[in-house]
Length: 295
Image (cartoon, rainbow, N blue to C red; front, side, top):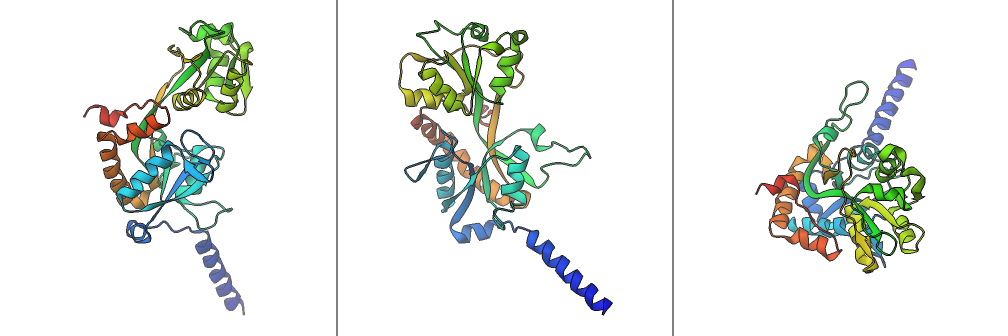
């Protein structure tokens, strides 16, 4: 009887382990299915968002171009940001989430293309993202400020914000930066909002005189506003650390063949200026990733 119970326990344990394993689709299976499952951040204009039931945004348009280059169609898996990017990669690329059992993306958009991040270790010295391959840089992003010239003549330095209210997204890099630069003298002028869009809307309403967010977001919001009084600032950001970074994609480490295939399509889109056209259609400036700047 004990042997029988032991055997049953072993079988049950194996079944539970198998149930917890999410299968990564092999490259040939993806091609045969005709569908590329792409993870993108939800409600994140101008990169990925919904308009009248249609998926829009730079990342969405790029994903469709990449999929078409492989004779595939796109199936979007919406990413609601977890506490960290590591969590998002775990939930969509290599393990899955308990709310979406047995569901993984084939590729995830808008992942930092950064060696330091790729090889980040935990407190035990283990690679946090060892099951993830980050590849295909397609955008170089920066920080950007915008202001209303009816209330500020020009922004030649962030020091101007010591005398003008500035709207920023709560718990964002602009928030931390502006609250600490110049010995914290700007902190009293900061107004916090739930999103970068809300901060921009506050500037339009006259609640604040300026705002700061990612360049892509600022470009898109200015394009949408179409107001000649709302302008791009040309200031630098002293003592900020990393002011520009590159964004690419991620796949499971077992699916490098998919990464190579996508990179081949991406290179053509970049060299033929197709990607720049996608960005321009949303009012965004496009800056080549370093990988392609030498070409």
